[in-house]
Length: 106
Image 1 (cartoon, rainbow, N blue to C red):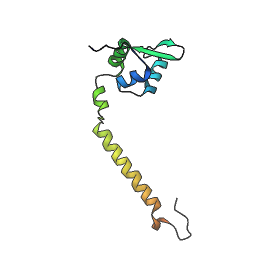
Image 2: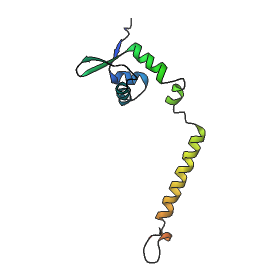
Image 3: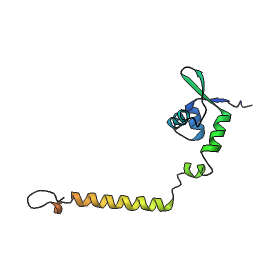
Image 4: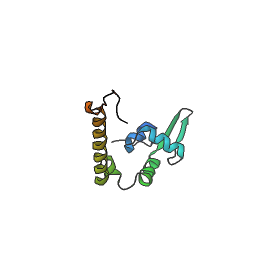
């Protein structure tokens, strides 16, 4: 019979929620997740608080975000932006862009 844990460290809570430990620490500092001091150096989060945070702060689309879902318009914009930047960089480093006096154009 499995024993259900009632307390989680920030690292365990982060793993449980699929977040980075620093995200849990920031949420605790902001007060959006309640953290209990067990010892002066050890903080813990209850299972109830973990579930409350999951419901209230991670939202309904959390599963899609965790799976790497990206808005297609946003993705298309970023692809075009990267292509423009790559073309600009190639144009700057092209040898035919160097002037006769050896200086690069502005």
